[in-house]
Image 1 (cartoon, one colour):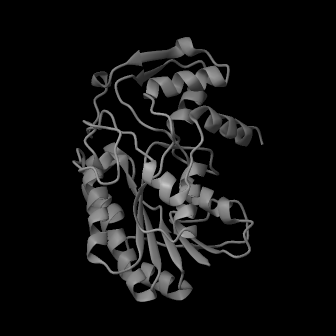
Image 2 (cartoon, one colour):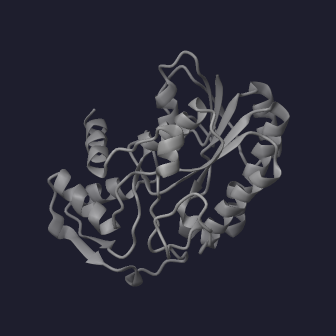
Length: 298
């Protein structure tokens, strides 16, 4: 199988490369913005701007992949609210380009989406629950999903949320590493207690994408962790697990933060479809922390 990954410098992109690195039956074409930030391996890396139809057509046409996994996106929710055109280019127009290229190449396209397409009033959510985006980021991701209703290519959409893990040379952090770093430095942190998410280990998300390929599955799948927690609970468990000072964590509600983009209050996913159709089973949050620690110690 020939697999093309967009956004290969990101957390999920790096985990997908690692997932397949010892599988001789898979040829990986990794693409991303700028220089390669992955460790050396048997894959091939090419810079590619997903917002350029010409570059996307050229790369997909040259490599003729069996499957494309689109992990490239603008995911900073507040930045998306302030830079709406750039957000739409990366989260919607880029997907249009990939669909057109896959229509020409016959490639299957697996696209990453988000729990933020839901309003958070009735979580946790199943795949066919009604979306109601509350921010420009969420609107862009829902618009990208709707593009697949008009194409004849084979496709799957993977909705996920709050992905955490360790990656090479990453500019952005995630709530687990952010909390750990600040607590190690003796810094007090304010963490909200009135939002609920299902934190997703990046390795689990990569495994979910791989199962979709393995099972030749199509349609929409919810792929996340198994524990629904508030960010405050995540930070507290992180402090306890890494033997840091939990008294540095101040429990607050979201009203104290002035943020451009509205967040859904309670999401979380019901994983029945992924379990039944894919055989997907995520690790617990504590198991995820254990893996994260082993990677940080390596």
